[in-house]
Length: 219
Ligand code: DX5
Ligand code: ZN
Image (cartoon, rainbow, N blue to C red; front, side, top):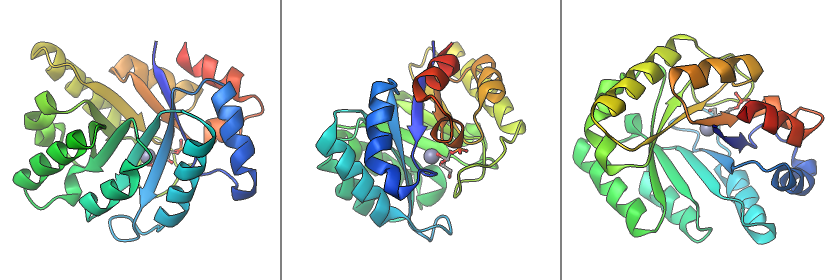
């Protein structure tokens, strides 16, 4: 059984509150908040995403799965802490050194959130092996970060397979989340590869019946 983290990146602003309510009743496991600073990725939506996350927290207890596609990671973590996110994920490509990565891991834990590290399609899984014992989740990007509605890059699922094998061989407890281009067929491929949390944006947000779409993806 996989968990579903619905990305609201492609949601229409005027439908926000209704969408949040519908997602809560459709039993999404998380709401995936895609924070973009206009520097790490060209899109800049961080003010709007903070607004959405605040609204969600005002009307529900849905767990927030915050995906920081930003530099100045600590500043963005501080912006979200008061919303009590379930997990905060940063990009390994956005830190200057391993020491900085360990500092951020510690900072997120000190602020009572779980820690995720994300890798872009061209980043090797080996680059994050050393952090695995200290974090809760690896977010393997299955598209280039920055936009919703893109097609999954099949080669990225080879990374998921490799990561799954490594954590099993080394008895490491860590969730594997995939993000980008997930629909009914790619969800199957991602599960086979070893992912246990699926981020899904357009495929849920544009669907007629959230509850039905989410329960099908979970099978
Ligand atoms: C892309 C984001 C993803 C994206 C997923 O940079 O990190 O979370 O919103 O959306 P879909 O499922 O539409 O590809
Ligand atoms: Zn994301």
